[in-house]
Amino acid sequence: MSDFTLTPSSETSAKKLMVSLDEAQAQQLQLIGNFSHEMRTPLSLVYGYMQSIHRRNENLTDLQKNALEIAMFEMKHTIQLLQESLDLARLDCHAICLRRESVPLHGLISEAIAFSPQVKSREITVESEESNILVLADAARLQQVLLRLIDNAVKYSDTAITIRLEKSGDYVAISICDRGCGIDLQDQLNIFNPFYRVDRSRNRDTGGAGLGLAIAKVLVEGMGGTLNVYSQLGEGSIFKIILKSLVSSA
Ligand code: ADP
Image (cartoon, rainbow, N blue to C red):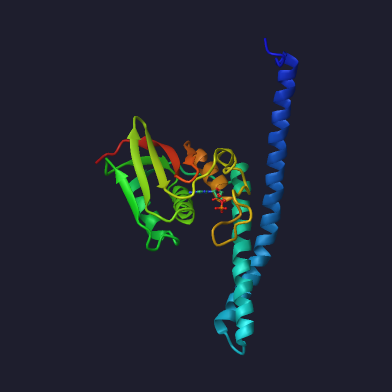
């Protein structure tokens, strides 16, 4: 018999520990949410003033214009980070209501590819045996998740990307597949945690604050689905969303 057996009392203590860890995490997220909310409004105002000075562009030397553009770039990133932190905190305490509506998947994916600011000349293929798949989801939020996953696939690979749709029983799997750098097993366990980045030294050209996947996972789970990663270092990654399918009336 193993030396390490859980007695009823140690099991209760372990459960209490888990609950207090969950509570501590919820409090931490609430604090981040409050802070982000307080900071976002004044910074958005300052950013608005900067934009208007930049637009008028009167009496600015090249040096001043350049400094203003750098400041605006940094400000935009900071506001985006605050917005993402706020979203995560609100999702965690269920302050954001997700819709459960019938969403035509092919149209949504085509829009996500067209809207993705990173795609440009990258080849993205959609593979699907069926042409009219409906899922139960919040269309705008699912779009947000797809944009994030496509954006990551583009950032962390440099060859063609495939989006595969597979229907199985009552569920639909949406896989965003790339043949990029891949993610090692230890990092796969952490990438859905807020603020986790595999290469912490990487600059902002290739990554953000490590909030995108955390938000994507909470959103998909809020729609009753799952989001998982399957990856091999040096081979590429597959981010797989599974959602409930709906019967098409067509
Ligand atoms: P970030 O804004 O840093 O990209 P994310 O939450 O979207 O934050 O991703 C967390 C980390 O997961 C990233 O820093 C990156 O290292 C890794 N990652 C995400 N998508 C991929 C991918 N398709 N291929 C390789 N690594 C990825």
